[in-house]
Image (cartoon, rainbow, N blue to C red; front, side, top):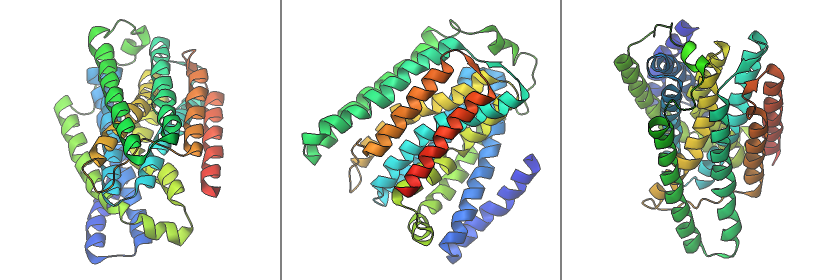
Length: 351
């Protein structure tokens, strides 16, 4: 499988450069860009696994989420420059429901077929549940409610204020988990799962590969954004569907690959940290950063979602909290999360 992805990169990335220079058809290049990004994401997953063995599940999961979300952040900035605010907000919605329901669901489902009962740190799960409630229900619902009677200028001011608070709390959460309370809530299996493993790559090599892969994805993602309009018209996809489903899946391919691989190897602490940690990073850091960055672009982006997006995100958060709060998972719980994701995907397609 690794050789296949390397071949895809060796063919896909040069073809991405040549195709963009020679102006190949947008529909063809859309497929090339997506497959190339997914192939590069597999390499990022291998690098993350090495870092996890060296640095532990929390830092490994955080690094995976960070480099993976860097892809989405880059795609979103280029989309903002192009004035595609609807696509950006939809892609943030897609990241939340995609990480929680699709990534989490696939991890539980695939891991559950190999292992009848998998466990992960229940303290981390409950801690993250509180943050998920804050990030989505407080951070996203409140702007929607209060912006109803506001002018656009006041809505932007409200969005900026909320964004600053969310970034500050996210940084505080990292300080809590990685500094002041590091190891306090660590379970035995977090240590036992990695103590006898030898990383494929050294720490330095893995970080360098992650950085280079992120740069390659950044270029490919920038080209991908320019195909959205043509592809949407060709297949009848709405801007909302492209953002919620297509951009979110491609932009988060690194997390998808890594979390599923970790679940298959029964490293559920890492898989859950990737799925939920990435969601928290998107909602509490990436989205607020995009709001602030948009202030320096022609069109500012308010942190206001459509009602369908709000309902989808809140539902995903509540369902995830109910399932993960016992610190255990199985294939049926994964199937439940996946079923919720596909129901929402159908809704966004038809909307």
